[in-house]
Image 1: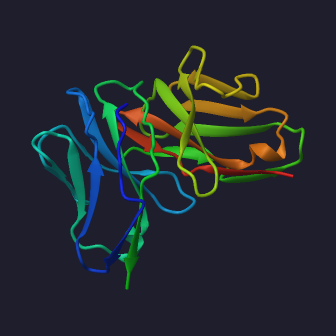
Image 2: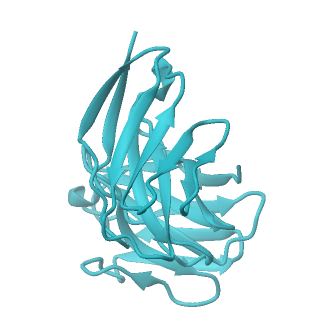
Amino acid sequence: DAKTTQPPSMDCAEGRAANLPCNHSTISGNEYVYWYRQIHSQGPQYIIHGLKNNETNEMASLIITEDRKSSTLILPHATLRDTAVYYCIVRVSGGSNYKLTFGKGTLLTVNP
Amino acid sequence: GAVVSQHPSRVICKSGTSVKIECRSLDFQATTMFWYRQFPKQSLMLMATSNEGSKATYEQGVEKDKFLINHASLTLSTLTVTSAHPEDSSFYICSASEGVKLFFGSGTQLSVL
């Protein structure tokens, strides 16, 4: 899996949008960008993934640059419950045996 | 999303004993499951890939005789920590693929006294 780079921590005010950046400059053409988050002492939770188009679901939006070397996860209206470590991971998709390799992630703290 | 159930959520055992952790995919079949370990304030580290009906594939540095993995059915994988020692105390997490997404169990906190 390609390596990703994320800031170690970020802060966000409750109700505001949280924009979490991720660099993946060595991503391959068949690798997708996945975002997971982990709330303290729980298993990681899937958020969203994409290949090259922007994606949106009920949790977040994913913006991938045209050259695919970076992406941004957007939580449109952050709440206190969104405080967690967010992991950006690139992974070959299309098969069940492709593992996820976690980096250090970004600790997002949502403040009241 | 798909549900992965992991049991127990917490276990305390004496040094030298063995502990079994179960991971079940509740509403889908998983030919492949993954086992991770996480130490405090660190990221998840992949231990092994569990393949239904065949031997697990272990990551470099993970002792296969110490961490026994069995994936006997399409919905169940087990991790047995044999002869546990205090340094094995950690948060163990399983995951399973459902389509292109990987879903995770809630984790097992193992404390070895």
